[in-house]
Amino acid sequence: MFKNIVISVICLLLFAPECFAQYTRTEKTMKIQLIRNATMKITYAGRTILADPMLSPKGAMDPFAGIARNPTIDLTMKTEEILSSVECVLITHNHPDHFDTAAIGIISKEMPIFCQGGDEEKIKEAGFTSVTPVETSREWNNIKIIRTGGKHGSGKVLEHMGKVSGFILTAKGEPIVYWVGDSIWCVEVKEAIEKYRPDIIITHSGGAKVPGFEPILMDAAQTAGLAKYAPKSSIVAIHMESLDHCTVTRESLRFEADKAGISASRLVIPKDGEILSF
Image (tube, rainbow, N blue to C red; front, top):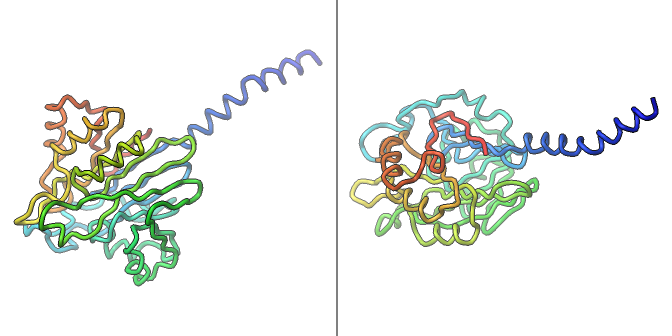
């Protein structure tokens, strides 16, 4: 009897740590769920972040390119489901396709919100009471949020588009995530890749165009170029097929990536509602 107990204890000591470690890893699996456009639910270090919430129904906003009212498609989920388990909101910039009136009306005013420096006053004016600007970096629940720069287009259109940001997410035991935000392929994006060596890069790849100007987001060719520039990173391409000024489709981006020799397993183009696990 005593011998059996000793053997059981030894087995527990030998194998239980690995069992517990496996359970912990499973619980901390990073996930990205694309909701629509740039709106995502990101599960990271055991926390759930809502990114760039645009929660309006189809056609609630004016056209951006004079083609159709925005968003051009409906949400694939109910807002209650989208907001379920969300613990904070992360906003790249205050354009209406990234933080709209519907989100302002639905999200709890006590919800912690992180934004780029300069946008906090407008968000506070909307009634939110826990707004934190990220000038360089901030810590939240053992997650480090680092602001990165970008360019929302090139040439004269920049006078109208304003300041935009991307964010790096880092945490112990988690992949380094670089969310580029509304930017074309530019020096700031290259520098962020070189400095942080992200495991996962989220790009806004819709090739959006304001009439009369050059694209204000990465297009298919620029996204493929980024993937080649960061050959060790997994790319998740979003911000497509939901606004009237976006010119890149999922199909055209996949075609460009295939032409460049970038596999579907490395450049992932999720559908609305789809959950990616890392």
